[in-house]
Image 1 (cartoon, rainbow over the protein chains, first blue to last red):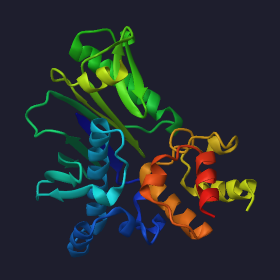
Image 2 (cartoon, rainbow over the protein chains, first blue to last red; image 1 turned 30 degrees about the vertical axis):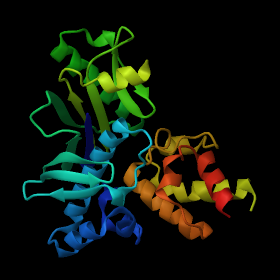
Image 3 (cartoon, each protein chain N blue to C red; image 1 turned 135 degrees about the vertical axis):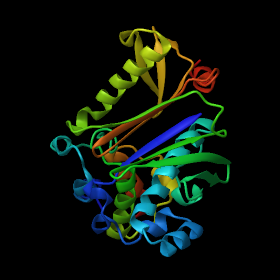
Length: 205
Length: 81
């Protein structure tokens, strides 16, 4: 299972001035708060932690729909290369955060990297915010069609709850998909390994 | 407190975090906060903290998990007052 999340570091919302004074205490564990306070770049680290939490939550929710997004319970522990794990009472999720000057992108899974056949992209989006989701889904259909040797118009992105799933001619496609949008970026990650879509095709039936 | 007053205060708190300002013109109890107003999840933390301050209540993460619409917010807050 896969989860991804993108953060636009240039978005005004990322700036400290707009954040509630209790935001950090609400979001981070005591260990994360200690790490932030000791960091020379707490603003960047804050969003590294956040994006890793979000990505891991998307995996956890697929494993168990009863899991809620309680940010401090998704505790992020990363090495200097921004690889590591998100620890939650219900599981430990491998995660990596790719950073560029203007954005962060986290990919989490329920198993160690190397076992998945992964398709992922981060793309700049400067159009109407209301259309970002539609544009992202169109891109996913196009990229998946190429990879799976299908026609993009035959692919449909449906949802189970808020979780995106892929259908071809109304039938489940054996992939596991995660979508994300923030500010000027849209992103997706798709696990194409055999059986990746079992969890949701079974849930759907 | 009447639910209409709670909704007015809820929308006022949400407004600075709404990415799709056009959706605010037709806001109602059925308006979805993430999908219609395009409030992102990081800003939702600010919204919840602002609700706590505005209404002098405490909101657990479990409460937030079942909130999708403006009406859900109003109902949650009304239950806690």
